[in-house]
Amino acid sequence: MTNKRIGTAKPRLHGRNAKIEEVMTGATVYNVPFPQELGTLKEMSPIVIRHPYSVEYLHSYGQDSPFFAGIANGRLLGTRCGRCRYTYATPRLHCANCGGETDWTELPREGRVHTFTTCYYGSEEFLKETPFHLILVEFDGVDTLFLARLIGVEGPEEIRIGMKVKSKFRRNSQLKPTDVYFVPS
Amino acid sequence: MVSGGVSKFAKARPDATFQKMVKEAFDYALGDVPRLKPDTIDGSVGSYFSDHFTRQLMAGIMATDYLGLCPKPNKRIEGGGATGGLCFQSAWESVASGRMNCCVAFGFETMSRVQTWKGNEFIAQASDMNFDYPVGGFYSGYYAMMVNRHIHEFGTTVEQMAMVSVKNHRNACFNPYAQKQKRLTVREVRNSEMVAYPLTLLDICVMSDGAAVCILADEKTAFRLTDKPVRITGVGTGTDMMRMADRPHGKVILAPNEKESDYRNVKYPGVHSFRAGRSAGLQAYKMAGIKDPLKEIDFIELHDAYTSSEIQTYEDLALCRYGEGGKFVEQGHPFMPRIDYGLKLKKKGTIPVNPSGGLIACGHPVGATGLMQAVFSFWQIQGSIRKHFGSGELQLKKANRGLIHSHAGTGTYVTVSILEKGW
Image (cartoon, rainbow over all chains, first blue to last red; front, side, top):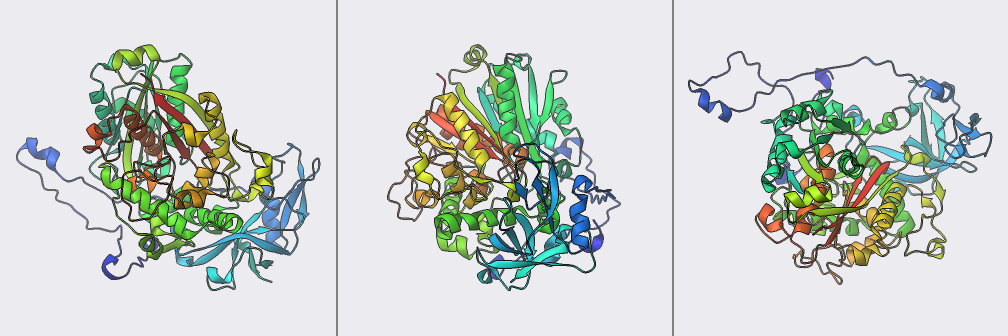
């Protein structure tokens, strides 16, 4: 958590519900008032200190890594169970149906919106990107769905369940699942 | 169950650490059964959801030692939003297995220590970190996608969802433990800020600081401690795949009062229904001998993190058929019979759901929530709502059997427990 990112929340309340933006910065205090009588200590206000912490974490995609190599190269990969043929749009190396090992397979370029939403708020990490559109994509011949961003529409009124969408890829891969995104086709 | 206690849920409790909040709930529970002495307690289970919110690993033992329950057994139970429900069932297991005669279940969460949007980030980390979180991890967004599919499949309306919000906020006006007490209209719910289409600010529960405690005992110990113990007659726990995208599109798991021909065109659970909730409900019904839940259960406290998920849960719990949840609330079935909501309801009060105000109005300090539901239900069955709430508006005339329902993720862990008059 960096200082810059603190207070990215933009309260969008209007009229009498409007509120000033809350930030987590505060005054630095060196002298803390202290009473003469210890008996009054239980009445004192709580002391709250600011405590930023950050972590460098080495996140391994493990057996899902080929998916990320795929999207970095403009190819969207799912997996298919060698035993029961169940096909996963969001890949997994082992089939949840039968326990068999799956094989990598390329998904169709075009799919349909299974469901959608438009997020006007979000987790702190994505707040600056709001509003954004999330869709679950269904593909012909594939048993499960794929979560992605939809771009190229203004608001939820322009999205409908069943509409055709087409995958596109970032040219400069971030090695995140958002390297692939969808647009209306 | 012989006693319970709840700290007043609040947006922020900077005056207390988690240990102190648990102590408040624990002392309240002890105060309600004066015959219970500390040496009767054989051990405890503790629940809190997120180490990020607590910023203290092994917080469970710190609450245990604060309560003076060392060196007796304790362990932490965690399962997302269902953490409290799982903790309740773990305490039940401790007693039912014979390992303990008397077990304390405590739960807490301190969510005010970070800003709301950081809190949402912590919560969203309870979704797949490879494929879901990085796309725009936000639980309200996930639930919005689920209800948009529910609307598509079954014609559920946003006004029906808003009625859940009106109901739960109104019920909470008579519950002094609730964080939000409001008289709302359907229009106000719809006109509040859009968070994730179609969910508005008033369709969604709030973060909270709070703690809750339940004390469970075997039958012999229970009757020694209180004249009015509540019997736990059924427990069920269901699970589903973490990623919504992975959920199957198969056949409905049928409740005893349903048949296959009811669901010719339903692909189940898809993303519109909670298979874990259905599974947990059916296990609990079987154990408690319930065939027709609508007729055989008097009230329900369920996990309404979203108005939409309350509607979806009516269906999972077989209070109505899949697809009829919206109409179920529109007709008035889950409302309290004697409270005025400013709505025209044809069949008001068939089976009151969330008489306490639920998560939407009481708040959702995750690790405490499932236990809070147990405490409110315990008081409801004992007929002691007036004593504990200071007013009897929410006391149901007939409250012999209640159901509590705790729910995690996008329906990944769900617990259902049946509580009944035990005397």
